Amino acid sequence: MSPCAEIVTFRLTTSTSTQAFLKAAEATIPVIQEFDGCLMRNLSVDDDGLWTDMVVWKDQETALKAADTVPKDLRFAPFASMIDGSSVVMRHAQVEMTM
Image 1 (spheres, one colour):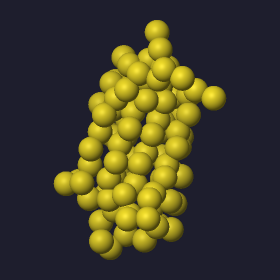
Image 2 (image 1 turned 60 degrees about the vertical axis):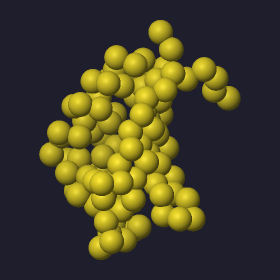
Image 3 (image 1 turned 135 degrees about the vertical axis):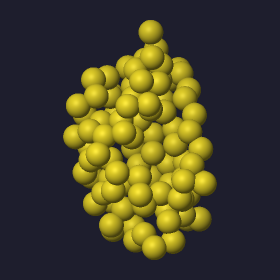
Image 4 (image 1 turned 135 degrees about the horizontal axis):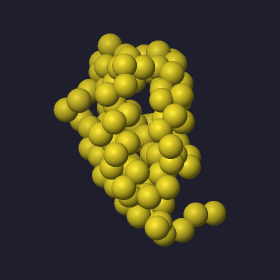
């Protein structure tokens, strides 16, 4: 089975600072690490304020289970509360190459 990338793009709520968001994002690290199968995670933002949270999971089944389970963890709530829900776009893609 090939690894699966979970790619989520979003914008922050207008009242959220980058510093506060990054602190909340750090608090999600244990949640993701405790869900077996996380290979890596990158959190980035472009010049227009569009964030991308990309997590690579060991396979698509794990990615889909994580997408359903991880956001329900109470430790994930502060992070999620800073995201403008109407801007969220999530997709999954098979990883074909890494370097």
